[in-house]
Length: 233
Image (cartoon, rainbow, N blue to C red; front, side):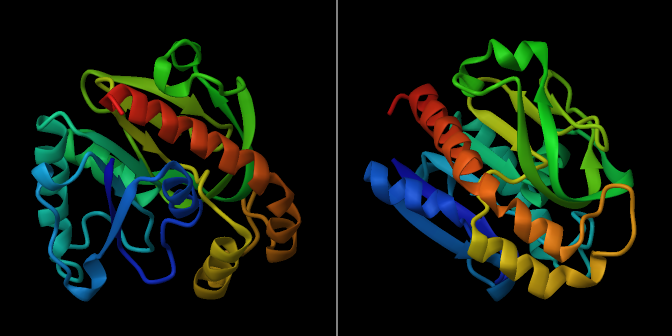
């Protein structure tokens, strides 16, 4: 399976996804959009993964490649390839499929329970998932559900945590790929956001929650395995 990862900032990479790809024998390529790297053509990838980032999806003046990335996502979905978006990446998928993106009522940063919807619990892409699990969050924006998509997950702070489009496209507002190293990089580069808030944890609390990484990484592996099966791998 050829996997192309779209990276938006230097401090948010594929983390555990790289480990999964190596263990499964897949071919993994990374594209640093912030450094001007060209976007892949749909024919060159079986799975396109859009990672997180600190920008807004409409910041075209600062990041003109965002418009081209959305078109890349649209073309990849239309080509019948598998697509996964995480946090900013999930918002980009939503926007590319006509699902509006805007401010969530509150910022959600830290480890919080996330619940699958009844429909997602019976969907092949979330096979093997528990109904509720702890996930890592770091976002202030959120997506609305695109037309013809399935609402897949929710949390107390953010109703739309995930959606499925067709049978090979998944957008997540939360992070299952996080490792101790990737979380530490977020704290280093975005720690100014850790202010008092109902759903904002301190750096110490976030580090204490790293005990969940083993479980969330296992869920990431299940989702990626399910996507690979849906693609025919």
